[in-house]
Amino acid sequence: MKNSFSEVKIFQVKPDKLDEFEKIITVIAEEQKQQEGCIDIKYVKRFFTLDEIGKPPRELTKIVKCVKYFSYWEFDSKENYGKAIEWFFKAHEKEIQKLLIMPFDINCGNSVC
Image 1 (cartoon, rainbow, N blue to C red):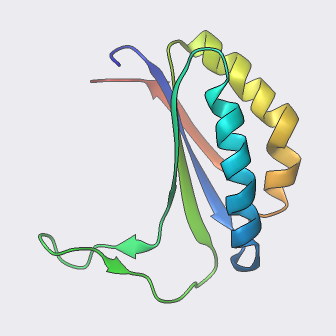
Image 2: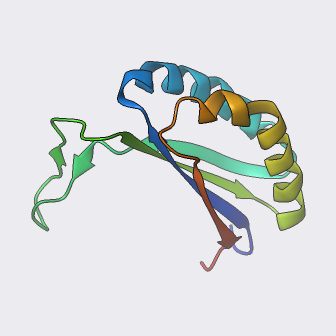
């Protein structure tokens, strides 16, 4: 959607907390979809890497420090995003932070295309 407002979060999850994190985000994602103005929410687990362009990605075989997850949350306006991110922090920040090696990173802005 042109002129939407989106956010990308990066979560660095402790290796022994992966199952718990995935259970929590499954529930949270359903709640995120219900926020006013939400267009879409997706979570991605980084478990592949590119070794060679043109070849399929290779699955990572060991966890070094953490497993990275990314979320993409899209809204119809930055005002609705502002209300939703306030809800997110109040409702879920504490339960998520205890599963991470460091606080999650948030990047947000207007869509370009």
